[in-house]
Amino acid sequence: MKKWFMIGIPVVIICAIAWFVYAEINGNPYVKYQMDKELPTHLETAGESKAATSMYLFANPKFLINNDYYGDIYTLEFKDEPHMHYYYGLSKKDKKITQFCEKDFDKDGVIDTITKETKHAEKSCVSMYANRD
Image 1 (cartoon, helix red, strand yellow):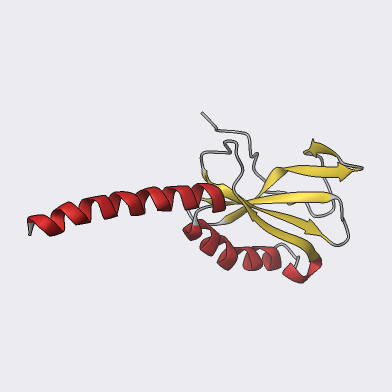
Image 2: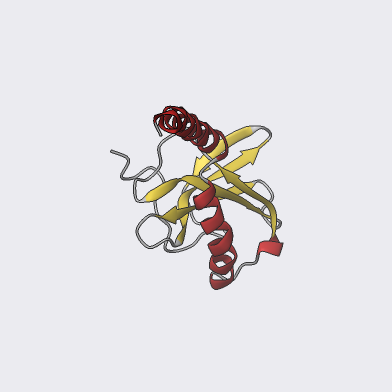
């Protein structure tokens, strides 16, 4: 019994460290699963479709975002706005997808973050940089 305990504890510690490193590099798999499941529904509700996107990227930003949302986000680029990147997050409270108000506009390699109204901006967006304390 003591032998299994002495082997089991290091294995559990190594697995926990491996999980933390994986999640830090690739993002939380649970959040990715939830967002993969909810984002197409959210886009359909907003009058968009996944087919209208030219880029669909799950990311783990290296900066803090709104504490009401998980730290992993989706970046979408629509075909009719090829240089505009929209960001979506998963709410911790109700597991719903929300578009963030901040959008990145990439022009000639220079990226500007904007919050103004754009073609695919949603009225109920939330600031990515609010509530980060």
